Image (tube, rainbow, N blue to C red; front, side, top):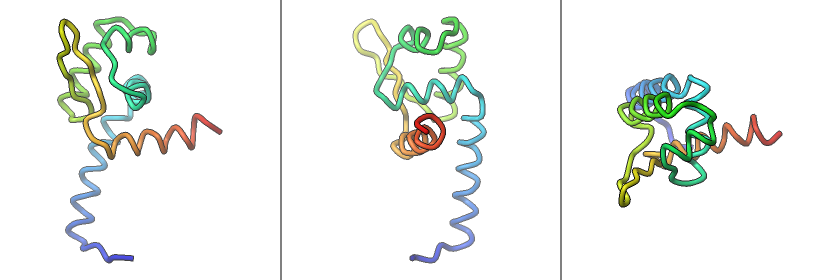
Length: 101
């Protein structure tokens, strides 16, 4: 096993804390759970998460600013997806431990 320097570990811990704080709201965590299955529109997420469109837009704006999701315009629609492959792995690990037991 490779030894990680203290400075590198401190930097990683800071980065992970920011991500975990951003995910600490139940609705944002639910949004991420749906997005690991593939890109979704705001309307898709509204239906899946049972929240208003304005609430979902607020969640997505914040999550985008925090680097959790990214948006891609396709025709008239904006599709949201998980911004970082590591987040997909993290959300899937959470789902494995807490949703599929």
